[in-house]
Length: 163
Image (cartoon, rainbow, N blue to C red; front, side, top):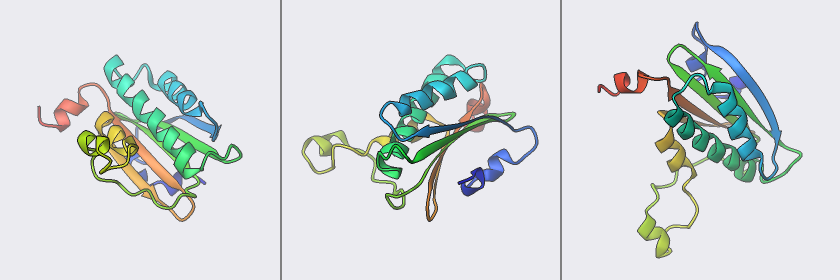
């Protein structure tokens, strides 16, 4: 499994992008937090504190999904976390073996529907990640999933949103 497996690879193919880290973790309990901590340490100097906290939340959720759903909690299967920095953004790719079938975006969670049982109690992951980062790209391959989290660096988010 390589980084070429991820869609939107053009995001990090342009000049000015640097690969900052390649992290391989077994699919074990607690490795979602380890992924979060390692990514945070890698990019702490690139993002303001509030944006770093948002990225940490998204990385932890993405890694947990990769461990639980993509790799089905099998410790012998790894997840891969690749971190890139470009002139305007930080990109984190979380790749798993995709044994659970394609990632399908569920409807936006509704707390009332969850409380009444109309929606399952779980299913907040993609919604939460999408709310925490500037862009979320999901790629389903035959034997992998790739979540690409894009966080624009300081000032870039406001400029891109027209503020």
